[in-house]
Image 1 (tube, rainbow, N blue to C red):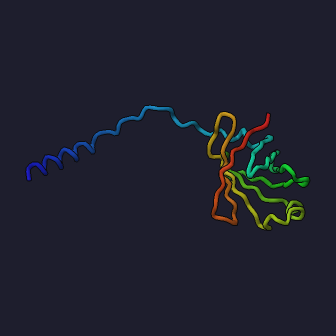
Image 2: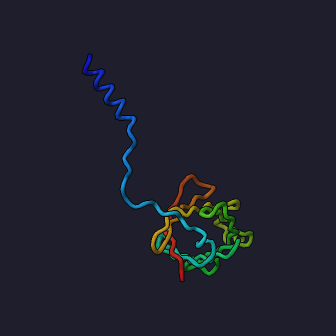
Image 3: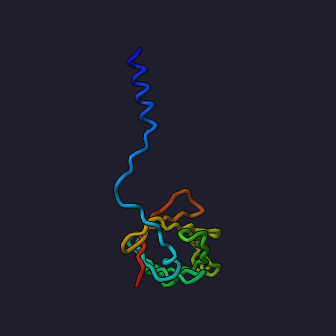
Length: 135
């Protein structure tokens, strides 16, 4: 019984000690404002899409398609925005659902690219895409 008490006291006294500091690189803060406007490229399912974002409008040019897709852009915060297809885009692209809203979150910033998590409002699924700024 005395051994149980000593073990209990030892465990209790150890829990009062401060956790050791971990040594390693600190996570970098995302700088998403530099992605608010510009030209970007991504490849999905073997097709390259060039996205041109300027202010509240983004126009996507999909490889092999002659008709661009234009979205209204609304920034929720520095790293998250929504894309809503314009009425003209809905007329030209009947495959796009009428009330589509895509929520785009810039989640990771890499040396030459950034990763976005795409969440469509018509699905519970999410898609990660790697996006490359075009200089």
